[in-house]
Image 1: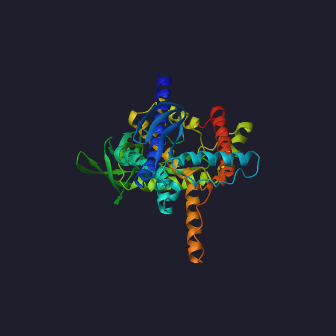
Image 2: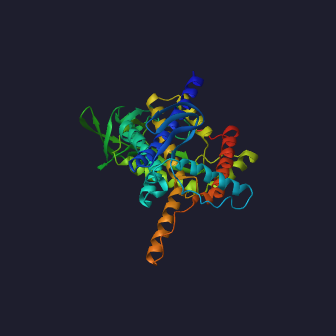
Image 3: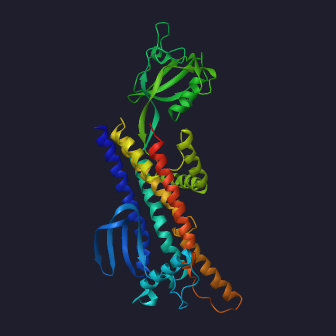
Length: 423
């Protein structure tokens, strides 16, 4: 049964990834069509085509490998000049091939409907549409989790009252342990703590902090019991607890645990959480080469990986499977799965903003540079320069793609051999 649940979790993540990619490409497609650019294809995935249908001038389809997608716009770059092959060698051949492919996309297309002829701001809108669609999807998913399902929180409601209090860190009471102060005072499960010694408490953490600092002191605890406020006199027992660093401390306890409930957050909590997630992912992306090197080193040393480090789609799928197979209420598993998909979309948003071709951020940089050149020429009274021939950057694109493939390969290998586990 656990294996079936694990497989279901992986499938859900793969479908979620495909939906995320489809939305990303829609973010490019809609403004491109709005601005009149001819779009020949809209494809989700790579490799062999599983399904496609042509509507108007655009072919819409799904391919076998759901690890990316694309739309093919006419005239991503200006037509190549009739100057023959410049130079030779591997990279020169790549540039020439890119120019040929680009020229083919221009055949029979009205010049007013090509991408490179658009104003700079329209090109930027088209290229940023994909990443921002992922950001919007992530915010929607976070709203479902935070404001729809809620955040699992220990509330001021008493979940259970112990019969006794262990005087050490032992989990079970012994015959020598005293009666729990809460039980002695008549506190019951279901009581909602309103205030302690006149201080109102908003959550269980606040109540616990007051109790821990009041060992041996009589406290007036007001609880709400079935709509009626009841005042109880409770004296916390002093017990020894060992902290994670081995330090022993004396704290007060009364022998209660708080009830766990899903507390719904306001709608604006989702954009705030998304912004915090963007910053965290951006820090990882900036340090990606170092993080991947550390991950590769862990394959050799066998050390535990950083749980906050980068993952491949294999690692994300394994975590999704673990979540689906976990021994937890279904609502908890749904919340974690949606949060995982939201984080995946945040990663797609940030990664695609990296200012290097072939990523969307690279195309934005090309458009901005084109606009700066035109403005500068106008400012100094020179003729307007022609559009930038970005096919010259194909060698840079090739290097970036190789780097992405290598880093992805390392992460996949690490996720197979030394995976990060939630449990």
